[in-house]
Length: 152
Image (cartoon, rainbow, N blue to C red; front, side, top):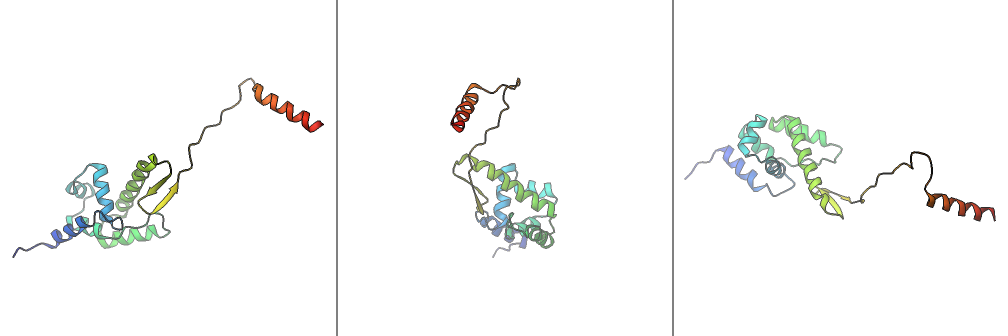
């Protein structure tokens, strides 16, 4: 019979949860793809152990839009020993890049499968009238006709 270390078992379970958006494993997996880093490179970058990475991956994903987001991330940090700034940074980056990727959908944008933001269209910048202060002829003509009608 083969013995498995606690670390290997946790990492195996974390790998199974990568497709589930309710877990940090999903966020970490997306972060890995966005940054084109291996799990070991992320562990090295954030100066955490494999066990801390696995514990973080097994945590429920905090809702970035919730009022208690800070509390949730601090709790994850205290359980895993991973710096809260790292946790928040990963979540924010993944959410931001996903939102940008979904901007191509003209109907709506989904942020981490949690909230849908309707697409409001494209904004146009207002332009100043000509620098010499003259209004264009169409504006002047429409003002003249409305003045004539109101005087009748």
